[in-house]
Length: 456
Image 1 (cartoon, rainbow, N blue to C red):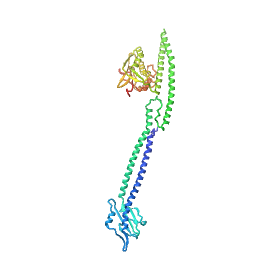
Image 2: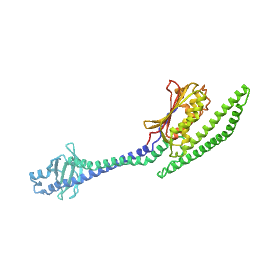
Image 3: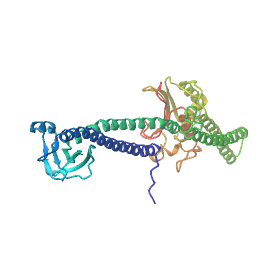
Image 4: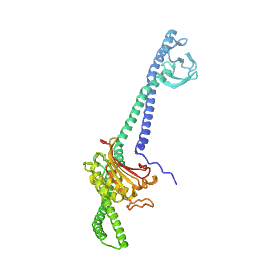
């Protein structure tokens, strides 16, 4: 099986394009700066170098005894002095013979009269720059200078030009990073909004502040969410209608069975009718749970009304419903209640008591006990229902919240929907539900519903 390739990143693609582009621009700017610096340095120093050439040329003439160079030695030293570079000169006569100066400068036959010529050469194994001129009398005058000052000026000019360019390039890259990051912010916000939703939250994404480039994507996602929402609504309506239609005949059937149980019947017939009655009661309870589940799922598509609900009062209402059932089953059902309020739907929140209590009474054997608690701990409202039944093994403590899941060999008469309803309602109210397997007597189950901290 081939490994999954990493998903391409838009941010990465942008920087793969921008960074090389900036580097290429910096390289081109550096090359141009280098060329311009060399040209500028060469032009400046060439103009300086031609001055001693002209001075020497003015002091060379053809005398009666041959070529003469009349410049005083002190003046020669003065015009050729340079504290950085080495400067040398050469004078050749019309016949090409050296009249004065050094003898290791190459002769040039293409010199023009009165027009300085500049070229590069070598002297003592070191590159030099040469300025030369031909006088009207046919003498060739050359002055050679090493390149130390020129190279230093080029370096200074490059530093002065490239350093700001590099700083501007880095600033441009940083600006590009900020711009790309801020440009990607709408995508990050949309991703964060979607990731924070539950699977049942199919509300459309708010595209009011979405950039125009992302609007088609957001519209497409909203169109898909709308289709899923419509499909989910159809399923919920079918479920609710089916459950609602079942309630009336089931209630009528249960009433007739209760009447029949009041008559004098054969024991075998009575046992059959009682079994039918128990099945009808469980089916009615299942229909009611389906209705509650459909309502809880519908709450995912819209915000809960901001109503304060007192958990203590809901627990007291549950006590009136389930205490008589617990007495008939010889189960000690106790309530330890403290004041606690949450924001939500009172009908749905009542099921956070009813479903766990019903499970506790279904699975706790006669002589056992169950305790219902509510209150506030560390600023968080909570509900717990603890029993001394057989308990839930650790491997199944997540599975029991799936719809219609029942433990193998379970003896209760439930349909495996109660805890799924509890989880759905808890999620719609921003609460967490979990199972603590260590009850007070070393066995049994404790269902814990913990709401968000006040003010969170």
